[in-house]
Image (cartoon, rainbow, N blue to C red; front, side, top):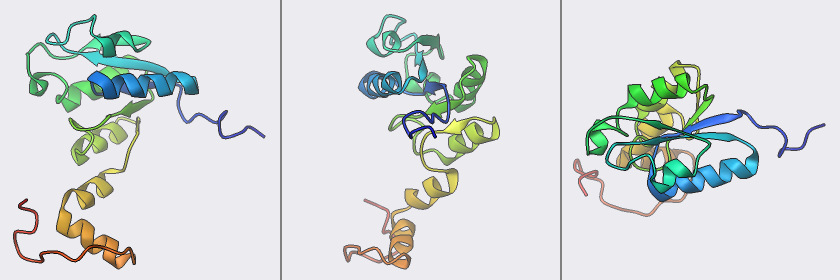
Length: 152
């Protein structure tokens, strides 16, 4: 029987992030024998460290801001499909907490490396996530219980 180390759920992952987190995900994938696709924007350039750390790098967006590149959820999914990726790892920030993005990935037949859309939605609201934890018997810290509980 294969060990857990031999049972890879996918062989190629698109890393939908940049910078140090993208480099860390790429290193881990390499250790696991998973091929990597990275994204780079015009602002970062093809020779940036995170694009150099992956097996294959593709350009996303032309603008200088993440909104014009890394946050373009539909384009990220299209690039994952075009490169033959079987999964998308969002890293952190950017699209990692976006339930709509997680749904787009799943609806395209790809694996989203992270929590599912329902979990992202539930945990995105502090008061709702606390209710879920309390309902599951997880100890929580007492706190404010007003209508603006998520305000900061």
